[in-house]
Image (cartoon, rainbow, N blue to C red; front, side):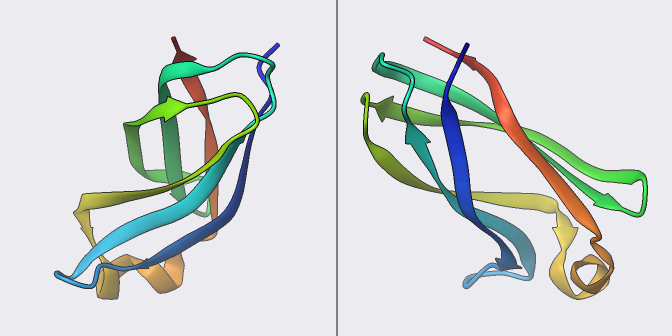
Length: 95
């Protein structure tokens, strides 16, 4: 079973545009190093999914923590940020 932990997750406004950006860190406690980890993030307003995106974190060594940042281009911060009620973040795959 994978032991990749996600923490310090923040949903913010992009510094260079009006889009939503998801920032955080992933720590690899799996006992293996990975060339690439596919991370899925889903954002919700109540129980409605408003974003479902996958991005890659490359070069995640065993025991390491890496920061990530994913721009969600289809969401404008001012229109949705205050209404986001929850998120889900998990590992889709890794190799």
